[in-house]
Image (cartoon, rainbow, N blue to C red; front, side, top):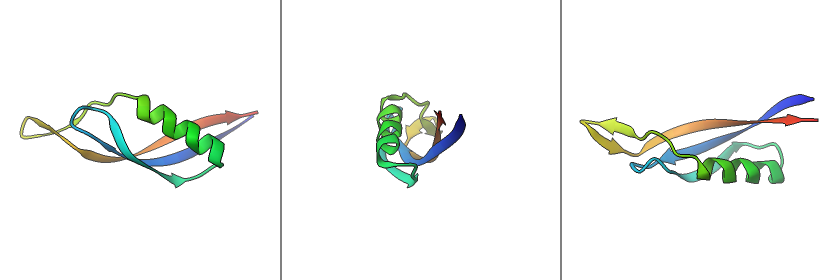
Length: 67
């Protein structure tokens, strides 16, 4: 099996949810969609500025083990 990954751009909102998700590095349309679905359900610790949660841009790599 080989390890392959999809690279996503996300904005983590003050509530810890991921939005504005874009594929930066694609594997194929099916795996890209699975990566977007997974990340959209994750909860993140929001970025903080002066003690307040703020939106933060991030890149997230989602790995797939291909058989």
